[in-house]
Image 1 (cartoon, rainbow, N blue to C red):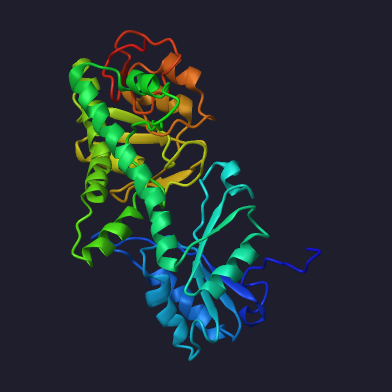
Image 2 (image 1 turned 90 degrees about the vertical axis):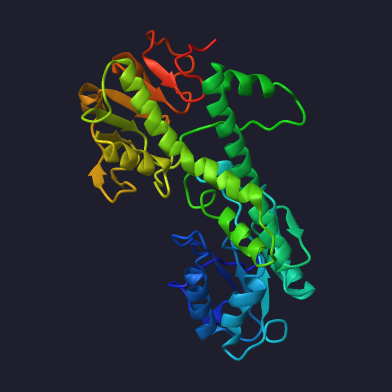
Length: 373
């Protein structure tokens, strides 16, 4: 760039030559849903080996409050250099929505909080080369908690509409009609929709970083843990819906052939991490069904039971399935073929909206067999 600002990856330049080092690695959870800082601390160890006086180190990985100023800083300071004296340290979380190009533009504000005011100011000045608006916070802890709040907000509201969907099924009310109606209010309401569960590397994972940290302060975050329980239960509910749909035709789930449409964790992306489709497929197989899937973006998929399979041709899946489950509504799927040829569909995403369907052809999550108004 004209001002001499360049972005390079570690394999393109020695870390010693960098004025600023950004760390953005996965932050997974253990099987017990505790934070796993292994990738973060490994990255810190790599930076530590090349850390120089005057450098700025910025952690971007979503994590619990206290990580940047705590274990991350401690690992860097094993170099003998001290944050705030020899190098500067800050936290500036990513704000990217996979599959949404608009979320990667300069117009999305960035957050930054340093261990002192100096790294906050320096990191903010650097980030303004990338984003138009940079919000400076008082500390890394505040920035870390702000990022977690964004994710927990989504998780809790998804859990709320998932619970409403289950209630609507019992009441014989169409949850999608209810949500559409509520969303006409121009203030005080934000639209969220139910589904087969939550997936990806953020929503099913990051809220547990907050609940784990809260317990260290003798505080139980019931909203976070309850939302997690509700959303984790949705794949099992989808399996029950499949059994209900087959039962309507006098068929048992055991021995049935089930086709899954979409295994990526959200529409129009190739990322299958933590996709609820994995739990749905495993649950169906555990109850005796044979399962195939079609996804135009994911050619091979490993379900939660460890069974790996390849994406089937859509025509073959439709011809060979007793029931089809819509798990991820990719735009690239031929929905005219799906609803024109499938004899029985369990629609978990309202993909049947606006389509002509036959009586009792489609069992919809949150609405039952009810036809759309």
